[in-house]
View 1 (cartoon, rainbow, N blue to C red):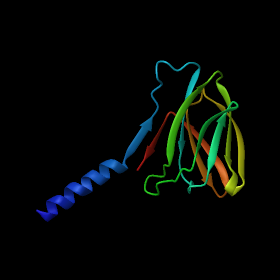
View 2 (view 1 turned 135 degrees about the horizontal axis):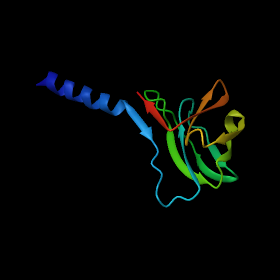
View 3 (view 1 turned 120 degrees about the vertical axis):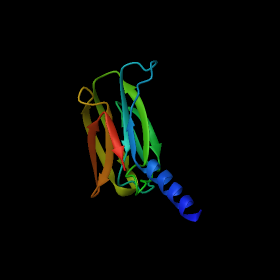
Length: 127
């Protein structure tokens, strides 16, 4: 009985680890929808993300080391090219990026060696 419980627990844990996330645009969203995944390198410092002058996220995300994922959020903008500003004041990180949403609607944002790295995709997978 003990072996069966351990096996079921292992299956449940494995199912929770393999995660493919994509964005489904709500029907009421106007403009160009986008979604953001805060991925690796976040360790609880206050940060904010501003898109085209509007703050879309403020918080203290922490990356789950097993998944490489910290937080997700979405929004929309009136343009297909948007300006994204990422600020992590405690780490003295201030980064501005111009993103073309015609390439992909998703942004994966990571902190690597003290710098912001953005990758675009329509979905992200986490193991």
